[in-house]
Image (cartoon, one colour):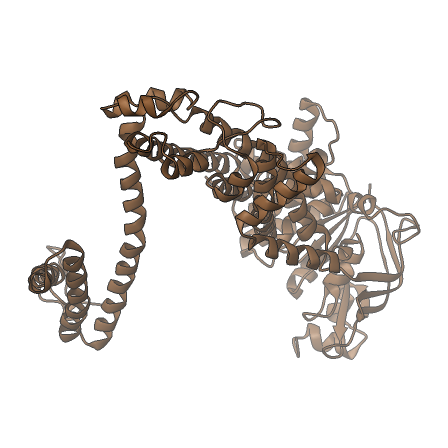
Length: 372
Length: 259
């Protein structure tokens, strides 16, 4: 169509009619630079701070950029660039807290991440040792018992909630056919999703208190509390994943003379397994950081306890909580603070590893679509 | 292998809604029967009652008798799963199992039912089924690759191979070519002509040329209006339906006056 082209040897190059009235490439960087400078000046007038500077620069850019584009390219392009910049701004706003959290935890946690931290418990650690520690590396005691507690309590909670949640979701999607039982289950699952975690903890504590006598506190009680929190998440997610399995696949299987339960096990679940696996991981990640229900169910331990069914246990969140609220040495809380940050870092690393595992699982099970 | 189907006064309901009313027909073994008619006239619904697939939809049920070589599919104590292993089905959209390789897709009917099959038997079954579906030469070097990586026409032939592999007596096809290009359609039609020597084939199609090309007998279904049940208007050898239809409605439809 167009006679103008930049391809040499075909026809003479000239200014294309199609690109007339477009903004020059340097416009946006220049507007950005002006906004930064003007923002600095405005902030200096009021009392300089980095946050104020960024705020002013952003506001100036959000006004000046679209106006400049609008003057050159017309109001439609101006409105378009305004929306584009707003989307970018919203994205930056959303990412700032995330990066800030990771940065803070890394900066504070890495110095405390010693072999003591990872491989010893708080058994026998008193204010005396903390007062003696000068350098970060000298701090005695660690979170080994809390890591053990977190892993075993979460393991038992997962072991209980995944089968229940999975089977419930299968019933809802494949069998209930909109019956009253299915509707009732959906309603209660929705209600359970909104249960405050401390209520789940009180429920588990009361349940075990009723059966085994008051103030029964073991890792298993905590696992039951976490199960109550986890089941609705697993059900909801698995339900979604099963619903997006195309009906055609079920019909194809039925048409081959395959029974319904076999169709579910061998066709429906394998097709949805990657989504189910990542959903289960998200559910684990949600409960692994719970603090409140553990405070009322698992008690508090300073020593390593591998037995989920007897004796008190500590998990990483409760460890952090106690280290901050009740430092081992009240006069010199630095050591406790350091242990708390390191424990927070360990918790984040565990969650990240879980996510990684979920991705690998999802990838391993994902329907194979590659390659003609 | 191939069996005849006799349908006697069949009504199909979806809950309170009567979808198909009073259909009777006899389908000969080793023949191709085409169902034509406007959308919503109940031809797919009727096709699905021939292997009880309509029961997958909640609230659907059928009255009347469907006899497969004299055995009533709707008799007391008949397991729909047994019926479906005798009457295979190919669907409108190709639907190979996405989690399985080409080989596993062909073996799906065996493997999903947990029947034991030795490696050499499985190899033979895969080859004979894929050859039966005219797909062997195209996929023999990549049997381990996912079935969803094939083209649409190849996927549909894979689905036919999958249906053949369970050795049914009848194969039902619900608009098997409506999602395919002319070349793939031709391949499927050739295939239908070949497999009718071994199977009773029933095919639903919107394409009247296709019906006249592939089928021995044609059934025309129609509906009086929305909310009314679909009925069998005329059932006769294909050449009669297209050349000398007995009913005015049939003539209007096949001559393109409506629909």
